[in-house]
Length: 292
Image (spheres, helix red, strand yellow):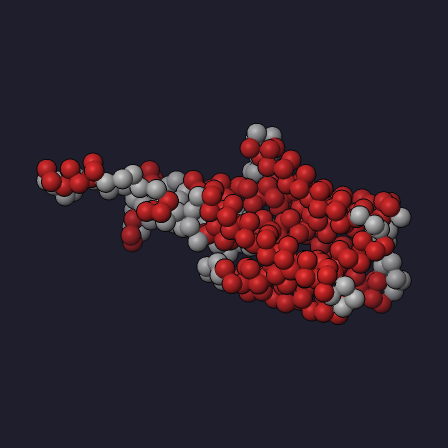
């Protein structure tokens, strides 16, 4: 089953007959498949080879024993350090853009909207790429940061301290979801994904309808951003952000276990950044409603 996170929907992270695309498949064999890669299985798992296909000389054995153990640098596989580093770079670029938007463009709502559009375009281009492109991911982070900087400045002027509260809340949700996932309190199963995806589709449709009513009807649309209904709607949005984080954690775990290429760590960073931005925006809107 494919991940509901759009970043992973076209990637090797989701290959396979189950929701975990990088589960080791080498033991199944690869009958009739060129290259010995199991059909529908881990694209990076190599079929087992007979170690006795080629005779070893005494000199060759000494060289093997003297050689250092193969690590990430030799295998080119993704590690948790790679994911942390790339995620740090992506979030750091996002913060730089946010500071720029907050300080230099506080009154340029139009430019902020243009930055948001560019960020959306770059995100979509990356989503349809066969391989992660760091320039696209960092470009998305920069323009998204500019938009968030202006957006947060507007909220801060109306509700003093709201952005700081939203940042702290986002960090708390990330930490809580990570602990819950590592402790296996949350298990990402196929049923879990189906339910979450259904809720996400309904949420997005409600957002679209609300925007249409706001554009052609009442200013408040369906009232999904004000009052008690707005609080419930924001809470659902935050829960969906936490759901997407759990999918991100699962995809990263499967990628590392299955030996995904190191370059895929950029894709993991992209997915985590999207989820964190989503949670931050929903929290900011919830805080504004509660403080009203």
